[in-house]
Image 1 (spheres, rainbow, N blue to C red):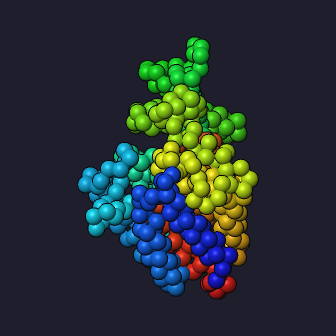
Image 2: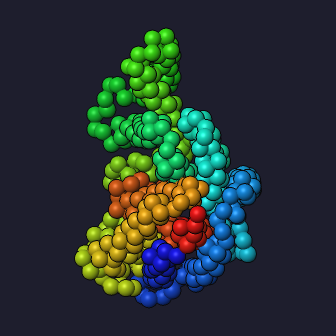
Length: 428
């Protein structure tokens, strides 16, 4: 068993409980929240889940992964219509009064297991067919979660897909296309907001990227180029026709997806993107979170102010300080050293996942590890990045550290899978 993975997970969990305890204190030293007690309950029960999952042979899950996937797909669909709304997202199920759980966290694990099963069973099929089916497996939960208005959680499924597709050996052109489409869609979504709200003198051409009917004209033009170049490819087999079609499809997809994003995003989500570009646009509103988080991190210095000595958190300047901005509390109280320790522990997790990919003899196990690796990487990159002001605020928790039972249980189950795979990695 890989004790480095287990040690890093336990260290991060303990640090999270300490930070949540600190987040519940006021400047007068009065506790206004018992979240740390709930987190201890989640952590202890999560360790039980970790032990159970690690002891069960992961191969036994392979035959049941489709049913696990369907079950959680049905649950998140139920939540869409009958769940509780928290922070603008209707993605919660209430449990036992004060407790609530977010099933979409478990949907990530279920999707990893089912996608790993499909990829391991389809290695004899054509790469393009595997890509389409794999993307459909990812897309089903993504669409339901978007309908819940939880854009941040929906985004997590794409790095899971990309990591698993890469390890599965799908054609790199397809993987690069999806990655470029994600980047292009993000840029085309943010660029009009930058022009409208931040640029002093708006340009005379960017309006074609977000105003009707110009977006439709652009998509139609790219589609026409795609059809002509596809005809050229099938008729003459010239390689440059393929790459013209590739680029045209990329442009059309990014434009269409960005147009959909502008219609799907709610006002508060749009403001999050705007203040990511310039928090001073709304310093006492949507920009408050980022500005106070940056202030907390910067004030920590090298060694920090000391445990329970943070001012930004104890004066309640940090919103969602026990969840979205838990890293800000760590950096303020433990300084650069504390922030570096968090980075180091996550590096250990990702490094050991990378080593496990090299030693696992079973492709199904490799795909599971790749999916978990993509999930951990994205959660850490986005959450720590938004605390430092270099990523938009998305509401994605920092695994092990942020308060929340569903996210802690989900990552404990994921660690249990890693430990179980590690213990059986040399099995023939």
